[in-house]
Image (cartoon, rainbow, N blue to C red; front, side):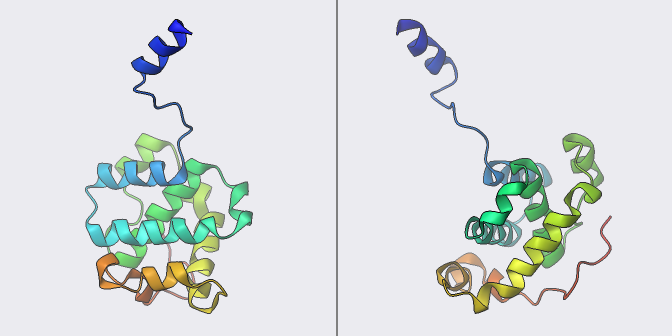
Length: 141
């Protein structure tokens, strides 16, 4: 028991597995993303929580794809070379997730449960749910 306390103390009681949100926030810090982009990424990740089919994706790839699509929606470079080199995740690795997230973004206003959509329509969250998104995924570098 004493050893467990020492180990938990050494890791500051942080023994949880990293989530897609954790990965996404790490990427936004690396890229020095603005609040608008961070809100868009958080919105995409919250939409993913409503759909069990996202469970087939690794948390790191889902977080990276949400970051990439948020950049597409808000203007910065979608997938910076430095981020790709640091993570080892390529656009090709994320293409299915990106398309899935884009579909979720387009369908959010028509869902039965609209709380997340309505939350992100608010100015407090930079009205990211109201962004006019491309119909299909643009070419991403």
